[in-house]
Image 1 (cartoon, rainbow, N blue to C red):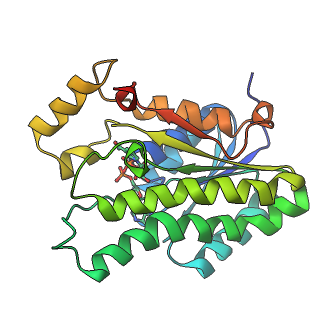
Image 2: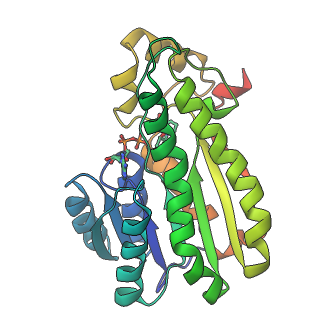
Image 3: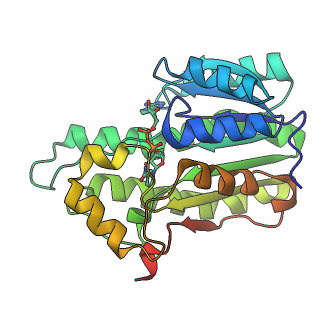
Amino acid sequence: MFDFENRVVMVTGGGQGIGAATATLFGEQGANVVVTDVVEEREAVGEAVEDAGGSALVRELDVTDYEQAQSVVKDTVDEFGRVDVLVNNAGIFPTAGVDEMTPEDWQRVIDINLTGTFNCTKAVLPVMRDQEYGRIVNISSASGGKIGWSGELSHYAASKGGVVGFTRSAAIDLGPDGITMNAIVPGMIDTGAAEEVSTDEEIQGAVNMTPVGRQGDPDELAAAIVYLASEPAAFVTGESLVVDGGITLV
Ligand SMILES: NC(=O)c1ccc[n+]([C@@H]2O[C@H](COP(=O)([O-])OP(=O)(O)OC[C@H]3O[C@@H](n4cnc5c(N)ncnc54)[C@H](O)[C@@H]3O)[C@@H](O)[C@H]2O)c1
């Protein structure tokens, strides 16, 4: 149903977890995938994309660096001729209560999770506007407004709530040029990331509260991203698609 032959997909934070699963799934759809990240693992993901049947371009990209984002977009256009899809996935989730959190801690989370989303969007927009076609998918979080989750994630929650607000307003701006922007709102996804910020008891508690009774798989997130990035999703914009096994229902 979804044809990504000759489509060009740029994924941020593509070196591991949800970003790696997403890049690989786009590869399976025959897309040209630009795998970007700050970590070296991006190279192995580029190989996985090619093994899956896609073409890969691998680039270092720190999403806080707008000029680097512009340079990666230029390389992408030089290599593949266009940019059809941007997946703003790069993110960090350190924990700290409001009292312990330093202004630098706060700023770093906002810079990567929220400003990084803006930087990469702004970098691809001239190309997408010229093409009169684009799909931008931003990864938010259930903690960005659907659920409190933890008292030690307020900077993270603020950044992810910001992503939803950015998505709704920017979608209005982009729509007339054939560009959609949507957000994905994941619950707990089994990338190992939750283990870094939560105890086993906390994770099991969240699983117990999840109607489907387990964490999500990165491939399940990737499938939702591929849908929003597809041509047939043209009439969906400014939306937040919750992919959480139902945890925010209860
Ligand atoms: N795993 C979950 O349960 C979950 C839940 C809700 C939302 N999310 C969101 O999904 C996204 C992916 O999460 P994940 O679980 O795969 O995490 P992950 O840590 O496995 O992957 C995140 C990637 O972002 C990269 N990254 C970090 N800082 C960067 C920067 N400055 N520039 C570019 N890349 C950078 C990391 O190197 C890493 O490869 C994040 O935005 C996260 O907030 C995850």
